[in-house]
Length: 551
Image 1: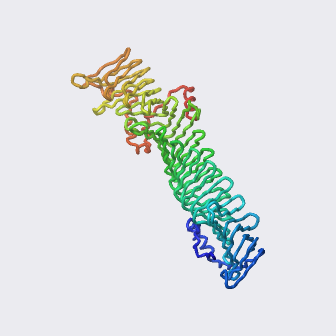
Image 2: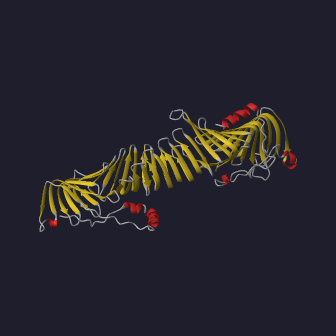
Image 3: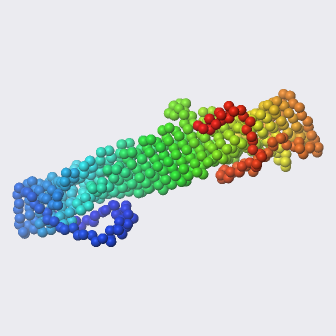
């Protein structure tokens, strides 16, 4: 029975690379393509030959060690029907084609069309497969079409390609023995070492180990999981270049961006444009237009419209700066901790707390955030500022704050232009449930506050006082009582308060600087000229700060 070639060839490369084909066609169409001259299929050897013009469809029947030769390829089998007029033959038993010293094909049955230089190979035993070998690459399938014009083998009912390290399976596949390009569609799976890629459409080069992702694809390599619909993945180097909002996930950390470069061996990744980073384990994240992350060393850097997020509590903390950097110490140990640096125009917002400064350092070891250069911290109607502010967190909530040098605390009262004020060299603030409940001022304490008559809740007047130490107790967001060991002061009745006594020296209510929403953190508004704090630290202290910021 003669097997014809009426079955249409299913070329996957035309589907995958149609756009490129249009470009190539446009260039090629200007030059007429030469017709390939048809050469004859020659019978080299057979132990037996039978011919009956009335039988076997005008075929010569060959048996025993049959060998054909055609354009440099030798084809062997146990028996064959040779159709000399159509320049073709059918082959049965131990069918084998050898082309040069690098390519061979074996099967149970074959049909070869010499005019089109196309071989169709099949197997009939479920335990066998057609095998195409090309140097270190081997293709397995039940039915294989091999086009010698293009040196291409393709299958339509499932196949597998194996090279030195990778195994690739799919329902439809196409392999070019010259370029080493392979095209796959439908239930595609690529396994190389500890990396597994699954997709419906894939272009892969067995020489370069480069997989061209052209559809929804998942790549699992060790603890990392990549999802992409467009990009490249090098299975040998474990490197990926991913486009179109691809995603990289690793132990609870996820990066999504317009484009991502990822190295699975070094653990380094770079993300560009509309970058979204989330850490579901530590409940924090980052938004920016450029991000760099070194997983093995625990180093991260992000910049360009960057926002750091902390969402372990009910409300999310949003923090913006020109650049953020994260360093990890004692990595892969029980004593691991991280230090985050944010510098240039830092602004932070959460419903219960807001802050601004020029730069900051957050150390997870003691949950302390240190703010440098004109720092200001707001909590509801409270404002804290000084040369340097340290904020200590507990379970991601403000636990206490330490203001160092030129400390100034202000409580804005409901009445217009009325503020309770305390200034000192050093100040501490203690919080409960996100609200300040106690304050302490130490050294050169100056006070201006309005005591309230408990019987009718009216203000009794303005108290001006000087002391060495003071404790302030807050209740329901208002000043409840003040304690001091010894003080000199005076009280002015409400109707007799001198205007110049209403405010302590250096008083400023920086409402125009305060972030008012999560979107407002991008709008940097400096203090008005002349209201900046001039540092008074000793040289040693300044040097230490610079060392900290330089980490």
